[in-house]
Length: 367
Image (cartoon, rainbow, N blue to C red; front, side, top):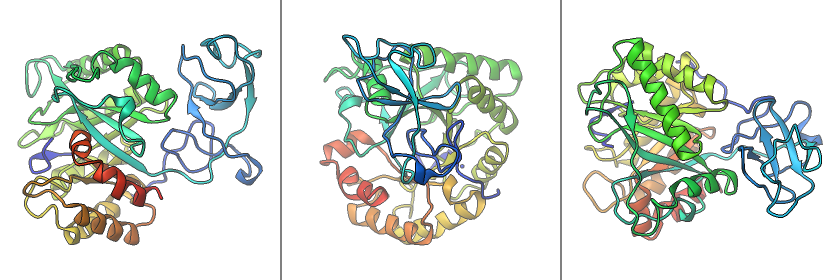
């Protein structure tokens, strides 16, 4: 993933909300139920997943009908993996509201690290994790349209426990897990519907392989690879139809006009939830003044609630220091209180540095 060479989120649009809700969206997909939110008790709901045994008192959002249910009885290992609408012994319908939506605090989790932190042990301030990265079969720009995803190194058990840790992060920790496709030179083309359908099928296969994910991150248009916008809109909407609440994002190059037009078209078509311009790994991208000014352009294009700010804190050229990242976020937040959030490239570097992003920038994003 390289901001200097990647391309990726017209009109200001309202934030997405959970099915069956009318309030502001929360990072875990929980919004505010219909009616007065003041009449509803706040809760920490998670999205229901098949086969999970939830502890007593857990509140879940059941996306097929957009309603909330609470575990009121347990037997042995929790709710026994039952469906809320079928078992009235384990489950009782309830209401749920959140006082305010959480902003995104994302981090990229590359699979090339030999001994990465396990996903369940990533600093708790990260509420969204990008699995980086699925790559095209046959190399860029892809021969069939299919992509594959490989597990990270297993030095600390990240590979052995990958599926279990992803589901634990989603169902118990309330995090979002998003598959990033492309990046690091892996552009893709979608010249026809056959290739697009093959791509959708391969994402569905990875979804099953991992036990479920919460979205996909378009990182497939790089360098000279122009996006096939019409087909990418079709792909995104197909995935959203197949998986209710599925998030579609992209990390564009901040200055790139092609990227801007792609993201504008995707958002206008309802095919993208947010864009996250990458302010690192390119000349001048670590300058807080540039970040603040450039974010204004993206906000004007998409609306503040469709923009996430990409940070890279590292002791390397064109990456930010801790103080630069703090300054950049404070300026952006002052200009755009409704900005969607921020992400960090990459989680493994953050851990090596003592979680400087998680401990210094994330608390400013979600106080």
